Structures are given as C-alpha cells and as structure tokens.
Amino acid sequence: MKTQIPGRDGDRGFTLIELLVVIAIIAILAALLMPALSKAKIQSQGIQCMNNSRQLTLAWRMYTDDNKDVLLFSYGSESGDEGFVWSGPAGSPWDLDDTSATVQGNWDYVDTIEKSPMWPYCGRSTGIWHCPADTSYGINPQGQRVPRPRSYSMSNWVGGNGDDPGNGYRGGWGLDANFEVFRKLSDMTQPGPSTTFVLLDERQNSINDGYFVVEMDGYTGTPNNTEEIVDFPASYHDNAGGFSFGDGHSEIHQWKDLRIINPPVIEITPDPNSRDVFWMQFHSTRVQ
Image 1 (tube, helix red, strand yellow):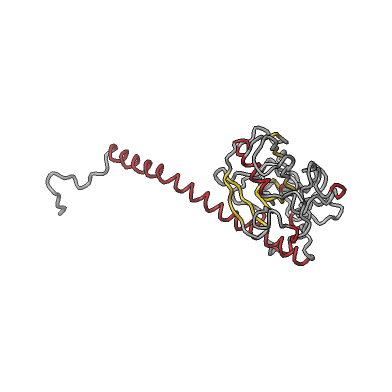
Image 2 (image 1 turned 180 degrees about the vertical axis):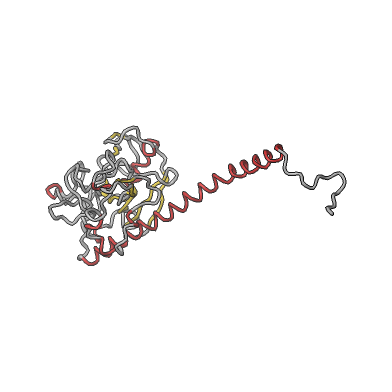
C-alpha cells in the first residue's frame, strides 16, 4: 500500500513557472560562459597558427641550409624560379582568388604548395600551410567545399622577386632608396633575424600569390605621412595577425589601425601615420 506524506503530492511534477526559472538560469549561465569559450577558442587558434608558421619557417631555414645560404624568392614563377610557392602572372590558376571559389589555386594542393621547394622539408604536411582561423574555402571539381591550401605569404624583402632581377629583385617596391632585399640568410643583419619577419597571415581577400609587399618608400624610422598599404595582413586572431621571423620564432601582433583591421577597399591605398604599416616596415629591411 502506497504511503503518502500529508500535504505533499508524491506524483507532482515541475510547474511551468519552475521550468521557466530553470531555463532562464541556464540561459544566463550560457551567456556568461560564451565569451570565455570564445576567448579560449581564439587563443587556441592563435597558438596553432604560431606553431604552423614556426614549422614553415623551420622548413624555410632547412632549405636555405641545404642551398648554401641562398634564400627562396618570395615570388617565383612557372619559368622555373625557386619561389616560396608555385606562382605565375596575375590571374594565374595557381594563385588564390577571392572572386571565385572554384579557381584551381583555391582547392588544388598538388599544383600549389606541393610544388614549393620547401615541401620536402615540412614533413609533407598540408595542414601547416593553413591558419586554423582562416575560414576561406575553395570548391574542388567534385563540388566539395574544402579549406584553401594556404593562409601564409612571404615578405617581398626576404628573397625578393625572381621575375624582376633588373631592379635588384625589388619587384618595383621601395625604389626611392637602396633598401636591401635579402638574398642570403647571412645578409639579414639589419634589422636582424629576430626582427625581420619572413611569413605572415595574409587577409583572405588580399592573398593571391605568395608575395606580400611592404612598401618602404618614405621610411625614416618613425611613423610619418608617407605610409602606404599594398597588401593587407589578416586579423584572424581578435584583430591580430600571425608572423614568423628569420630566427625561427613566431608571434601574434595586435593591430591598432582600423584601416588594417577593416579596410574599406583592398587595393594600394595611402595609409599616412599608420603605426601598423610602420611596424611592418620596421620589421622588414633597412637602407644598405
């Protein structure tokens, strides 16, 4: 025989008000936890990005050691120049292209990064060429949506432009003074390997070939009104971007300039008194 406590209904469930209170408490807790979880995800992606660029830079160093200190061009071509990645003229099918996800360079690992002279030195790992926070994608011939092969580009001052040796491998940038294009690792004395960036995350609608241009014209050692932005760095990591340096270390740099974080247009643009452009100039090269 069932015993029932006086004044209590042993079969009573939750009332609607009680359920609503519990749901409200869960929603509040979730709202409190979401920023912390989002921050943890950003930090985790930043750490993985630094690890990837560090591994790529190690591959770059090993290639250099095996090739008598001679650096890869940051821009090579299909003509056989030893470039960071397989590339070609503007609009080349091997380049990344933000206008159409089906362009070959957006999905083809074999004819892009696997043709890099660095490929044998990076453990034949495709993953280290891609920042985990980079959401850009390609669509392969099977109609599958896949991550783009590459998120990183190389400084134009580290290796230079193999297609344009006539003007000192500058590729048309920084011609108003004799800024040095490093062709050997041993040349990297000013500003020095620990200060000279080699690779960086490039913004997904700016990246095309592997050649990231930092315009040095007008550089005086302090920010001034001559700065100009040519290629745009990424800001995947909470308005910050990843960089690796000639000594092998990687770091995440926090951007301050909204013209870098959220550019109104992706084209060569005057960016006077930009601390961020100056930071990239400072970490690129010096007058010989």
